[in-house]
Image (cartoon, rainbow, N blue to C red; front, side, top):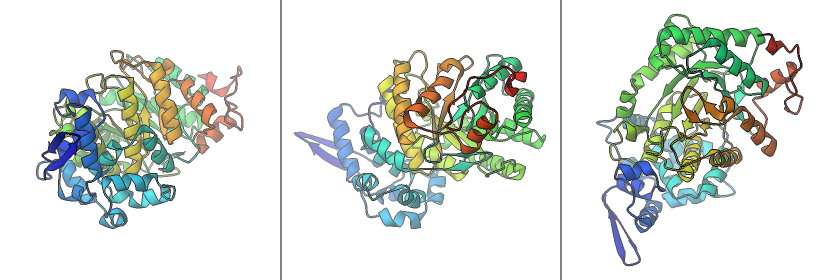
Length: 456
């Protein structure tokens, strides 16, 4: 279907829905590099006006990537809940924005219609929303998940303890892990990005973290962020696997470039069900995403990077994950050029993931060659805290020595907790108190000589 709009003396024509979505996107260097972005602000505004008037039903009739050639498109079709969609099926994209922002629309109402939303509908409404709109709507939504503790409750905020090491050195990893625990970090997961994806390295690190968790009865989960096929192999060897991890993208071709298919994730999910290692819940999948992954794999099919990103959330939604996080500035300035673009992308991803019913966190980060700094990350952290983000990263000194990028530190989570009065996962908070690491308010205490954690 061809779409038209006139702005002043200029007539704009968009040949299909895919083009309208791309041209309506806020400025992103990745879309510009791919030749998909609006040529100027007039064209961008025209596309936004066109998009606002498109009925939500149109997204069910006009595929942006044909399902005949893409497994993710087929998944989106097969999992669409027409009953949940019915109450908003009469709305346009603009009308949907108004509905989301209305005082009367609370988190429960949003959760009821969420299964009826396709990624393209969600991406579309985000493109016509200001940053404050994204924050307001996301703040209404709570997505609660459970494994060994409870993540995502209102007034709570979790962190992934990320003790990466440039050589996978056990002592270095353990030192960073203990340091993080002393700051109250790690209730989302203690998760290591290994240098080597070998099964032997992954097994060694898994056993080390599992021993630590058992020794101190820490109510959290551990994860070695190896490739999903490595994890499946280790599950078959009876390794102590808690969470099953994989980076995912929004097209079949992107995921093929990552070395897996939906069938692989089905196998992993079934293996996790059979493991049954959770104590308070059964959410055990962990996914990471990021705007630009489909573009960097030349697997975007002419779709803008943010819409590709939201399509990845359809993949995540199928497997009821414990954690999903957008590694927002990790790919680099080729896709998000500066701090402004990183902040916008982080708010988009969090909003879109929450709207699709996902437990969204964010790795608030940037590479050293991007036009951003730690002040930009502080700003995004504060905005996501207000928006009700489920979790962030805790990296020693905010500087990941293995992945070579800047993220958020152990201290950063203390800042956002103090400013907004946010608690950790309740089971983890109780453990910190029992270990004399915090008081009843969640304030961290000075570690005394003789503390159990220092015995290591």
